[in-house]
Length: 411
Image (cartoon, rainbow, N blue to C red; front, side, top):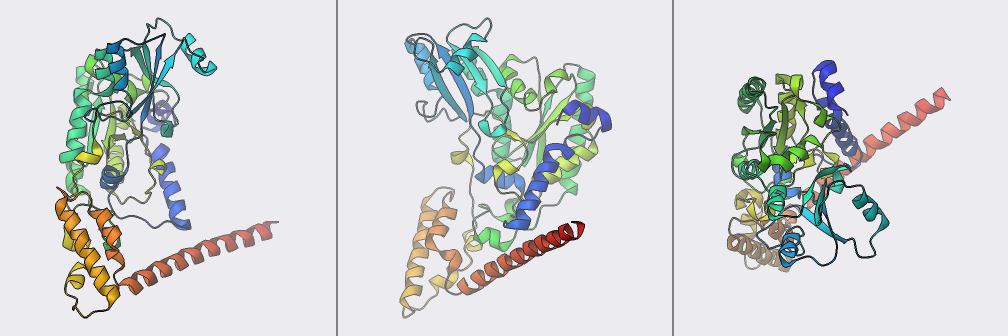
């Protein structure tokens, strides 16, 4: 949905665009076959939504020099150093080879391009086909493309203190930018006090959908100001402006809530930076993650140099995560063979957890040990699951019958 018409016609912002559609899809999926997840969106996204990879085309002619080859190697997970973790995948295109006609046509459309030349694209999952940014393959350009001070600070905060970071893209007009920043900071500070986290369902904890103690969940927001004139942020600015069709045309302050592993929710622009829209965005971010499938949620991932899998800390309260564990440990040595086997497996799972610094693998260890389906609670879990499925099936059948009935009457 174009931002300009949405903002200037009613000043409401993006909540009725991509977020409204996503929520409708989530509700439809839930009604058919998917239970809701009570874990807040921001935390579920941080733990489980891998950052979508950007694509970069590198055009060259003939052999790359050793220095150019090292730069190209940094752009692909197959060749980059382990320390150079970034959601980016490269395709090297030699113009002297039997190149795909579409790639050759794409190169021929470039103006004032010096080989070797890079063209950065949004993730396929975003559906955005426009080029994000293009430039010569140089050390400075590669560094600027994959990382910047603002993106690094946003990643640091998401990993340590904040539920979401609100990036304010400045216009260059100090008075307007300062006013937007004051309003934003005031509103997100109030949201921290007014909004309430969802109550986490015990089943979601047992299934490993939350990998930190519920007491460590918190509502914490902050803002980062990004200048359009800062060369170090040039690629980041282009990423933000290209996420919706007409943002490049607008010279207004823009706010992008960023959460999870660098996912930008949508743009609040000009008059759309208001109390209602900020609250709507904040409520979505800390609300229950009803749509567990990432692609059914609004937003576009940002290109960030962060090893999320390694840096996201799973600090699990084992007693809460694995409620039947004490029962296994207390079993009599003369218990049935199946119960003894379950006890041994559960002990192995706990040892695996203790051996992993930060307890990062507890969800997998618990799943492997079948602790969630212990003999004492297996019937109850299965019965609860079956009842839920029957209810969902009955509701779906009822909706279909009513629809057919009404359709028959109208016919």
